[in-house]
Image 1 (cartoon, one colour):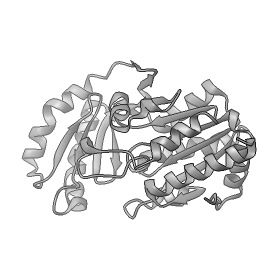
Image 2 (cartoon, rainbow, N blue to C red):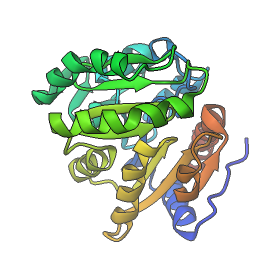
Image 3 (cartoon, rainbow, N blue to C red):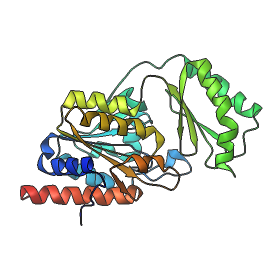
Image 4 (spheres, rainbow, N blue to C red):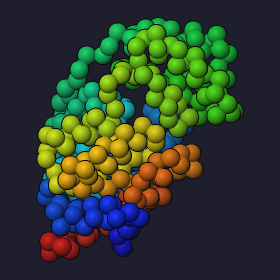
Length: 276
């Protein structure tokens, strides 16, 4: 299995460092759209076949393996079977929750989440939200999905202004995504979560893989880390729905299937380098 090459000098330098200094490497992933294909109902999400086995293989060769997701940490672990990956850290709710070794540590949710929980159903009724619109309650945040409507983009355009105003009143942040708008606490994002994890683990090289707009802060964090001497590689798990992520990446792979192949190629390369 050949190892794909990044399109940027910074990405190629990071990949070289990843292969030569794997024991000091940090590799982190988004969940939905990256480790798991996007599905109409996120409650039925499941990892791409074989990808968690790839993560488990890599965990024995790397310094740190992490997942950074907007989902609750325990939900991502349960849906993904991520507890099979030795030593993995799962940062849920954009870093507000941390799962390690079967235990979750979390910060309190702000009161605005309860306000949104109370008002959101009536708001959608008043806007005559199209059939197929549904609310996902994540505990610390709420998301409005339009993927199952007849016109997902049109439904988002209809609902987003009112959702943004509700978020403003609740002192929450609006997070757009692939046919979804999430209302979540301010002050947390994947970039901040990744930066904090890097500060804790002190890697020499970082790889982050994501697919959606919520992953762009993590990409920006990798770019900022390069200026501090930490080499970094941004990988896009590509889709036709979001192009901005591919434009910001050093390496683009075709969705979770392509990422599975990349992880397999990395594992083969690392084992070959070590003679395992």
